[in-house]
Length: 91
Image (cartoon, rainbow, N blue to C red; front, side, top):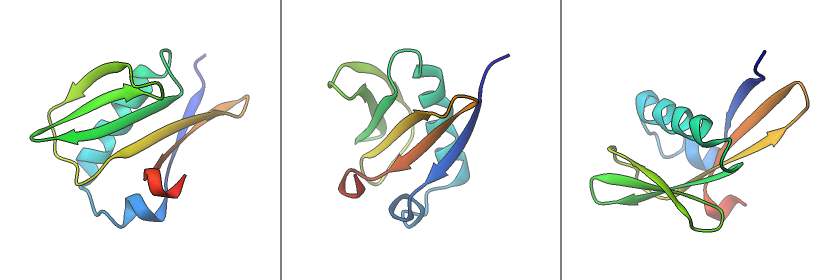
């Protein structure tokens, strides 16, 4: 059985007021990429978002709009993962 994933957003991400659909797509993509990295960066670039790991290795793109860079960091709590979306300035 796969571990469940609890999604958490910092106040900074909440204050961006992104649509639920955009945030859900971001978390879904981060979850898909978890086997490659527990640190996922979503960096807006025009009409799309570049996705990379903590070392700057490109992992893909999303066709969506984000107002600023958002990181998703996964922590393993044994029985579940916690995926935290935060702004780089909140790290």
